[in-house]
Figure: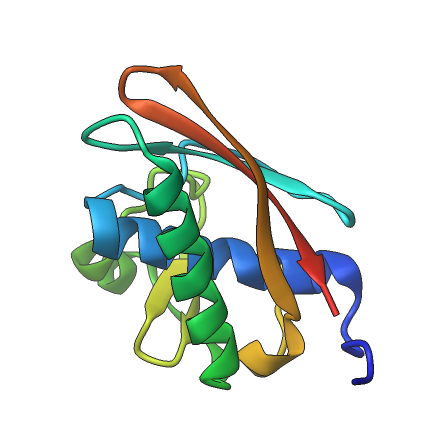
Length: 148
């Protein structure tokens, strides 16, 4: 199998969106509280209702990989701040932004974002959680990497 063509950071960023969507679906987590995006590994912090188990982490990894394999289109549109405020959480958007770029991954995720993304989830590669630590009783830090 050939390695994905998109730059590593672009693939990581799209994977972060998929992880956020899975965390929201499984645990009701809002978008990540903190994130460090890297070419080799990325970390994201999420609010969760309880301590996560090894089974939870395996299920998260499998669900993200299922979304990747689904070959979902990744698109973007620009909307007014007023329109975005009616549908999205804008806490990470600068207060002076008047136009907001919304990145959509099929029907799985839609979020304000200025970063680069792949055109299709199949370009991401295999998602693998490397570690997950509870920072406190409600915040999990998930570190992940991508494999071709």
